[in-house]
Amino acid sequence: MNARMQQRAARVLVALLGEDLPQATWTISEHYSAPRLEGQLGLLSTPAAIKLDRLQMWADHLDAEIVSKRYENQTGGSVSVTSYVDGVRVTVWAAFLKKDLPASIGSRPSVRGGPDIGAEAEDGYRAEQDDPS
Image 1 (cartoon, one colour):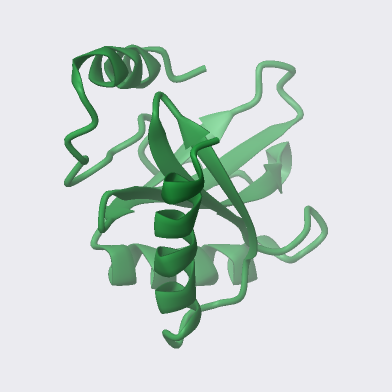
Image 2: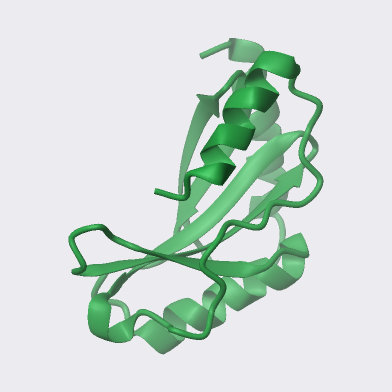
């Protein structure tokens, strides 16, 4: 990963950590030449209502929608919020057991304000959005 991109993602992470938001376990990565931050909320055993409340706080802060994704093996899924902050894709998510996975939440990613990441990266990003698996 490009050190400059890591630094940009780290600056965004430091700013997010300064906000009054639920704690997450963070990973910095790069995808299609764009920096990413991923934060996991709680454990699988954390009560679903607590995880959903925490996700709603992140959704409100990032001005993003909450979306769900069922795992192919049908054992559960994830619920996430994704947006861009200063050109860094920020995703906050939580894993849910099948019985706890909310049915009334959207099922496709909704990403607002994407960065200018170049034509090749943009093509890869769009392909990712078209294939929600």
